[in-house]
Length: 395
Ligand SMILES: [Zn+2]
Image 1: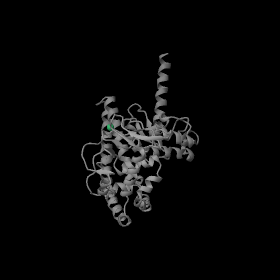
Image 2 (image 1 turned 180 degrees about the horizontal axis):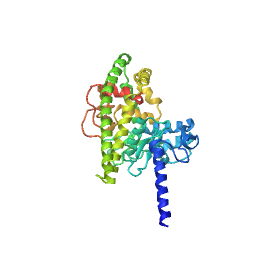
Image 3 (image 1 turned 60 degrees about the horizontal axis):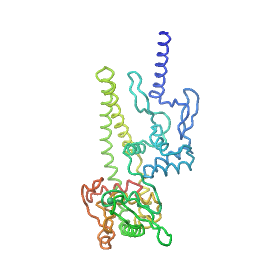
């Protein structure tokens, strides 16, 4: 019996060793069913994953929508229409957290060999930077749940003076018609009719629009801004590469300590997880910094013109795009108090008419510190402009 038992243990070790080698050393996908987004082809050792373009489109949509702050329930609905068979928010979160989509897989430790995320040999569907951004977002604690309602696009993005995002509710008028109001959960804080709210906001966007000649200037300066950015990126890239090397040294040292029994398994696991996470985040940034600027350049050149009519852009946007435009324009700090919009932060470039906005009782732009979660912007040093240019969502 004992011999048989030993045999079993040996076999199990052999199997686990085989799995470890296949996954960590050879980067193979060993599970029976391919993950959503891939086919499996080939036999035995040659078996590998290839992208299923139709499903991969859904995976790309899920990551993109999630990073654009689309609520999970809406992503789930849309994904289902696109052919994603599993339903519910959890299924979407699971897709977002699979390292396989970024070309990695999780491997259990085996004997003295470390576990963690290892590169897999199949083609990724999502680039590492996007994947890492999604992980960072998933790690954040759940914010208040917001339902998207086209009648009340500001719900979930506009704040009350107390800092809470507004909710909204319809109320029925005498003739049976519905009127919509933005409200704060705390009594007597806010009761703002959506008609007034939207009317003021579109006027604000109209005044944020840039005159033709400024846009022309911007267009002429785009090259300069990009050159500056490329130079800046180079410096950051060198820094990040150094940091990555340092992490690799750390990883080596911690593995050595574990193998020579200087530290416990728990200590090792804790350290290994932290180092692994830092490494992936650094690798993602490096990948991003070495990527092609030409695409961004083109997007900027093609869309600069839109800055001349932001009111129109706002009006033709769908609800999620509207929210994104407001978040970007006011750095997520737009709130409403005593009959007027207020913000401590705003894209400098678009703040050229704030005096007029104040005169017209539309918006008060006062730089304040320490009231809201996001730090206020630091003056006109151009970083915001560069962010704006970098972030294609701004357009
Ligand atoms: Zn309030």
